Image (cartoon, rainbow, N blue to C red; front, side, top):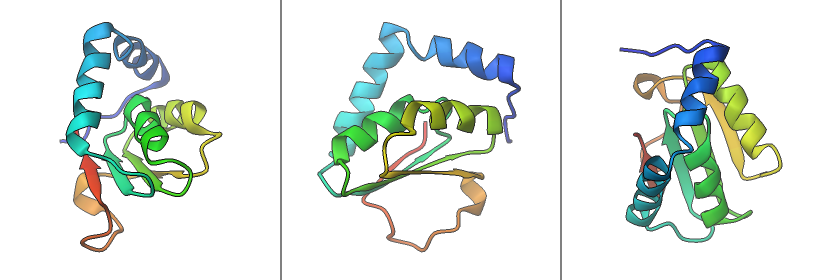
Amino acid sequence: MTLNFNEEMAHSLEQSYQTPEIAKQRQCTLHSLRLQPDNHAIDIGCGPGFLTKEIADEIGPDGRVIGVDNSLPMLRLTHTRTRTLTQVKLIQGTLQHLPFDNNTFDALACI
């Protein structure tokens, strides 16, 4: 099942992702990914981009983060959040149709 969000729904979800409990969940996810500088990571279903940005901050400018979402409004929010981070690339797509070879990434988030 693919979720599609309009602009209003995307902004509403973005607000909910800023609550302390969701921020804590992101920190747990970051910890479990065990990211290292220069890693290549993918965030599938990146939504408004909070986790994508935090992954990019962890891996630094020599790493690579791919944010994937089916929703253009969500990708626009992610772009706004990560536009100054050269290690971030955004793709509209779904988990079932990713244009990458096996073993391309050091870490994968899909929450």
